[in-house]
Image 1: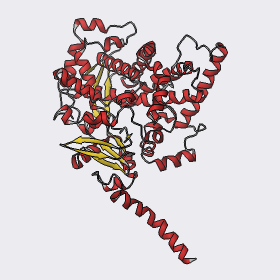
Image 2: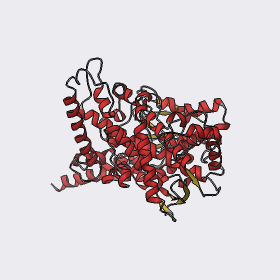
Image 3: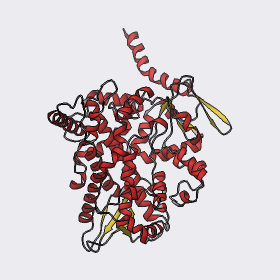
Image 4: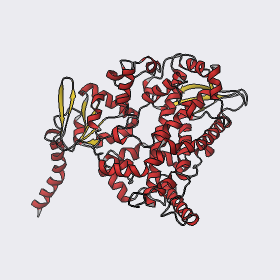
Length: 517
């Protein structure tokens, strides 16, 4: 009996050691350079993410400098910084890795792993996200922007003084209000309350939930324990519960008002939810209430994040980059342009904001979206037979089944693509570049995903980004003097404060940038 107990103890203690040794020295990825801890366990990724997303991005850049453009980042994960190999990694038949289902934990287009299943799922909701379908929402977006401006002025521009605000937080409130109104028919009032309503944003943005997405075992344990429940008073459970009730009401309303809804969808548009419900396949199939709910949740959390992370760096960098703000103001104050910017609603139409009449504004936006590119990796599964990645006059073989990924941030800061000043905010690069260079940048732009899996909500996000950035640019001025561009360590928008003041109800907001302490 004692012998059996000893053997059991040795197996219990020895098995993890053997697994680690196998992963480091005998695994199919053992020939790929990278940290030994990364080869041993996914906890390596989770720990980096707890430290911070932007800090993890800098860590990945350092790893590429040390180990080369292909780095082993997990027991079965490889990260790549090779723009020209994006078509190889993100080819049309590439399947997503389990990271997506672990990270989000809900069945939606975004989390569909198999490429064929994804194509079918995407068809069901694609029409709702087309620019034609998005355009009618512009009035709702305008209303939310005006409410946001009013709150900023009343809360942070007290007469005779200035107050500092976390601008990224302010943008988050606006972005979430816009998306919840479009998705569910009513905003959750983040701007009106000027608070994270029942900590919904924090529950998604927080580092701990995101770190769990890097460790499938821990994530599955959390899900099995039911840590996020519809009965929760705060966090993601609140969102799941509230969305459930919203769609139960919506379904009841539609079936009551339109008895023929099942066979003939109503000819009007209320929300994303109603559009999803109205979808009919060629065989008469429909989306279930659960599917509609989860697609709407995905639209909220994924869309809001993209918007906030593009707008904050635009504003902050434009204010700080040498001569940038002054040049932008000269363009916007041109007599002919000022006539175009007038609007009965007080918010510039998207058609005007995105026109070629504002080249420097557009360049600032493009540069802002480049410099703020998300550090999140987007893994794909290496296909049967593996894949060959070319670099430095040789090729590296990635075995079948390995998760291979890059991030839009790695590509956006790639000096081979954008030059030695890739880390600097310099809008002029977009005006100086040749047509061939611009085409190359567009080809390897990973901001909205790649290939057949580009962000389905891109049209809505772009509309919001253009409108909000132009609104801030046309209604604000700055008392900041020319100084160096945003230091790279301050690219994290959560580290920035704005001070705001106004000298009267008709005066523009005065903005200045300060590092948060």
